[in-house]
Length: 252
Image 1 (cartoon, helix red, strand yellow):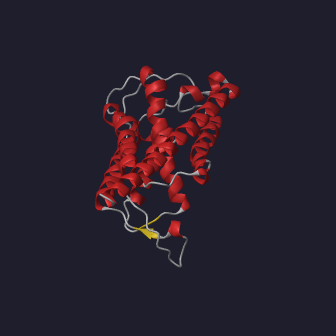
Image 2 (cartoon, rainbow, N blue to C red; image 1 turned 90 degrees about the horizontal axis):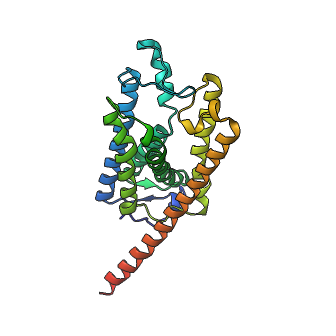
């Protein structure tokens, strides 16, 4: 488990002061980052060169591109607009920062840490519940889909449970952690209004209209708050358990 230092430096508050990370935690953070980066980089490369197997898509959804070099920009634009990619990038960046030694626990990094487990959890759940049942995984997707939607989410949550950092989730981090998901929503809607295409069926305004899509996104954001509340409760429970364990060890 990682621990924070109470030392205060003139350059910042105690929360922003450097604190040590155990060797095991650094290796876990680095491995988590490497897996996330692998999924993102492979997906971007394969998308850029047009290696993914073409599949018929419903009207108003991403997937229609010119062949060869003519389709590079549109393919990469679509790839960069999936929530899956956003969540994996947040994980990759956050875990890379956490692997640093010493680390400054700034408010931004605390929010990004919560974002990393929140967004990757939503990615895994939405994929399993809404997308996987109707998605045929073929070609190179057999390699990248499990990394993006299953392996990275599982590793990220396990690493958080085991190594934390603990005590970073509180009332001040909950609402700011919704900023990145809200920016993603704004981006896909803005881009969709220009190209008339959307990443997922449940945000397809061309089919469902603005009202139903807005209601669906509100439900998903509300679900995000529930997920954060659950992680907050787990964090509190783990902190108490660690405190009791440390006390028992001290007096044994």
